[in-house]
Length: 200
Ligand SMILES: [Mn+2]
Image 1 (tube, helix red, strand yellow):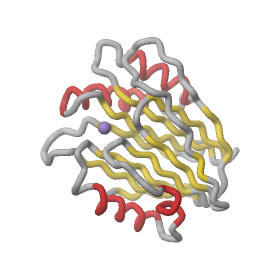
Image 2 (tube, protein in one colour):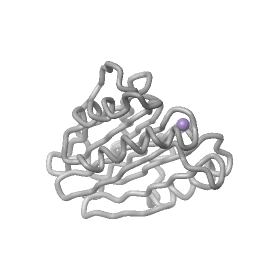
Image 3 (cartoon, protein in one colour):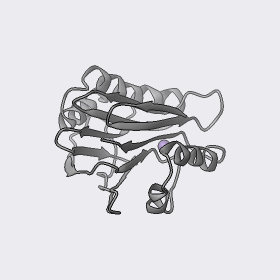
């Protein structure tokens, strides 16, 4: 598990593949600047290198264009997947000055944000995956509070009680290590999670 800190956000990231020494079909990208933080997870269709080719196409594209807005990045990702297997894609972008975040997802990547007051925000993704075909997005904007904790993860883990997991008064590193020890040994799929806390 990797741990990153910016002046307003702490982040744990983790990825494992379902078989040791196999390339993961999931890809993720993280960018934290003073103006925004962008997090993306792509879960390529299938497994191994064919899945990785699609998911890494998306994260490489987002890496080159991370200043663009979420809806534009979803559209560009979709176009980039034409004639490839396809991928689930989730993008979240936090704006610390306005305390807002923008979310869009097509496919099976999950996202949760728990505010300090106990409100759980879990926007539902659009069903399906990106593969260059015409696609409708449901890009949503939310307000958040300092102290909010969020989790986005690929379908390599199935969580039961997200609220109690995220509301534990621990450091996110402790929650992250617990996720790794609980889900990593038993995963039947590639697994990626990004777990963060907004500190300022
Ligand atoms: Mn998967």
